[in-house]
Image 1 (spheres, rainbow, N blue to C red):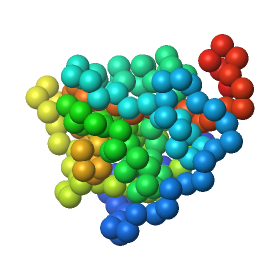
Image 2: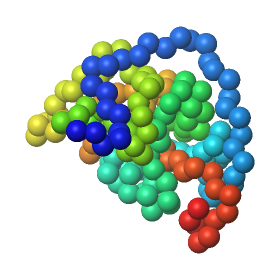
Image 3: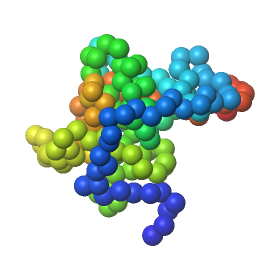
Length: 169
């Protein structure tokens, strides 16, 4: 079954070197007013005192014409970490587990970079048998699979646009 989406089993882990890669070249488009440009994308990090579930976070991003972030390098992780200034919550990202295929990004980009915390993902079940199918980013940038109903901050992104018409590229 080929859907054009690359899936990685949950036990696949890539080790990282501590050397940070260079910042990507700036994009040639523009961003929505409430987002911050980085490379070819525009980012929004919510880190207020009130937390949101993963589905609520995804919905908020989509209402702003964005997706929960997919992260493809250590530099992107550091960029998001630096924008989580309050540290009230860990931050939901767009990585989720599908019971049939393993981990995948909600924006359908391929998985070539993972940044799991030690002993993660661990697929622990929470009270009520709630599985850990959503991924949060800790303040140190490492990732943890968690119950999707936990309340967290979140990070969204959209591709830079040449021109916006009613908030659409």
